[in-house]
Image 1: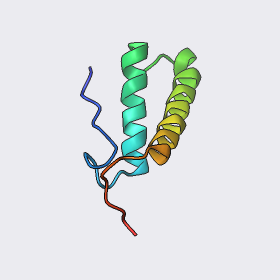
Image 2 (image 1 turned 90 degrees about the horizontal axis):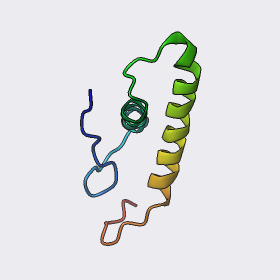
Image 3 (image 1 turned 90 degrees about the vertical axis):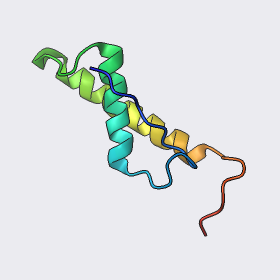
Amino acid sequence: MCRSIKTLRPPAAEEVTDEDIRAAALQYVRKVSGFRRPAAHNQAVFDRAVDEVTRATTALLAGLEVRGARSRT
């Protein structure tokens, strides 16, 4: 059931897409909940958790300062 969630910050990942972040969030929620596909009565809370983890991950990656990383400007 569980694949490794890959590192999404530089320099381990140079280009991270919204899809990469959402896939990591989905994998996290699957692991924590123990459900690969939740039952219909749990779908809304499952989807909400994926959305919240996606937002938190996006904010985390945007706020990280990676020492020694080269500027891309």
